[in-house]
Image (cartoon, helix red, strand yellow):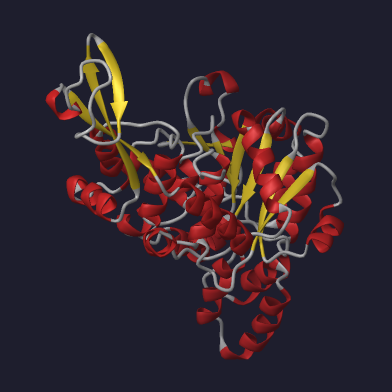
Length: 399
């Protein structure tokens, strides 16, 4: 059984979902149609009858027969068994087959091992805390999520600026780029790039071409984004300029097709009963809305009106930060402000990759944040993200 389960579970994430969702009602018996419907949902491109047949052949299910006698329903393990009421064999009655999974213990052990493989020792407790607060959790999405489908990280947006800088300045650009100081990089680009004279040029010539890259639908659907949408939060906040969340939602009919940003915000009453993506740093559809330079950040976070909007978005909600790096000094400062603004109401959650918890605690300078630390040896962390969200939603079976 263990080898059969590992072959199915580890090699295919769709099997993962199917086996877990089946196991969550594992103490009950269902007719074949129940399992065929689950297979159609989680493995829509497969022949559900053949898949169910394969599971039966691998003895992944227990079977019993339910039959009627004298207006009552009885169960039996074998059709040849005699009915205690009338003495006839079960097969001589009206009967139907019922099935229940027989792999629960092994699936639970496998899931526990995946948690150990995917996350550090404290993350399971934190994920359970997120689950207990799920009704007030708001995903807060950073550039790491877009990076997963081939978009650049925040710092990488400026990398191609080097291409049109004269050779004499390129060594200086490299030095500034290696320092990761965005302000100095922007300052230098505006000073020596022949096409960049001001902030509008910077957004149009450097940032927009990178953000407007066309990402194939198949890549979007196989990325981390569908898992984030699955949380079905009231809304999603992002610092990204791109509209990949909206495009993926449109493909999945998830309900998050509408975009909002602070520059065009018309009041919270306009958001009632509408799921949407709120771009707090603006969108590529409106260059003027994009928060890029230090001046842009100051205008955003020093404006009382805009701070009121931000406070309204996060107040009394728990933020689930996804795809952020604390090496981004802008975000680090911003993160502290966000956490402190709803301190006393809710706990915030930060998903980091191969993180040093002590270092992060010192850097953040805030107490109402808990960490989910993904262990990864490469950038492809889709399985870890997918498992985490399924666990948060209560879709992972553990005895």
